[in-house]
Image 1: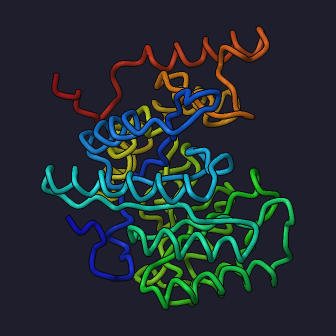
Image 2: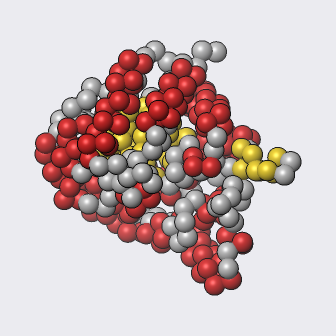
Length: 327
């Protein structure tokens, strides 16, 4: 089966809803931890059957920093191929995204080309320059170079603005200029700066540049400011609930969306009670790779605090405005 779809730029409609920033399950392979593809496929089944709009492979939550380039390409290729097959079985579209970012422009270009030629995701996520922390002019030049390649490959780029992880931030003026690039389709915003998003939304065309929440606790806030959805870590464990927030918000039912967002806060707190994705791997009972570690390997105080938050979140069985899953 040809798993590479016809070339096309991503549309705002493809970015609506909840997209799961999938964890990358690991298992022992000899003395190392390797990708557990059986668990990858099981997780894809779970979130797609819950109704999410899309999936992201090899993002921050997916341990991209601990994957070799070959592993990253393999994960994106096999994961997207499987997700597209399941989408066909379910009879509905599923947006498939892949992370290809790097603080090295050459590496970002290399990964973009390799992943696109292997499987052609609907769009590729590109993070701001971590560690080297380039100035705004450097960020703009970096993303324009990636965008130029994406345009030649007839694919799209999503910017990832997450200064808390990278120490590097795309400022509003720079974002507005980058939004003019024909291959730069959206931003996943994890700055928490809603005022900046208002400025960006007012200065850009929603038909050409989409806003996505990168903060699980701000989905409604971002959508109230013209956002179309979320790329969510917590949706690994609560996919149906995060998809429902975006549906309520898109329908303008703000009171219900806010009520559900508040009800999910203990779950979000549990997911981020220690560094993401450690708690998610505990919830999903799968391994991860050093220097990340399991909840059980934390010092006793942090371990007990994390387990208490996780157990409290997982004890919540009903959420407002969400139909129970069929048994």
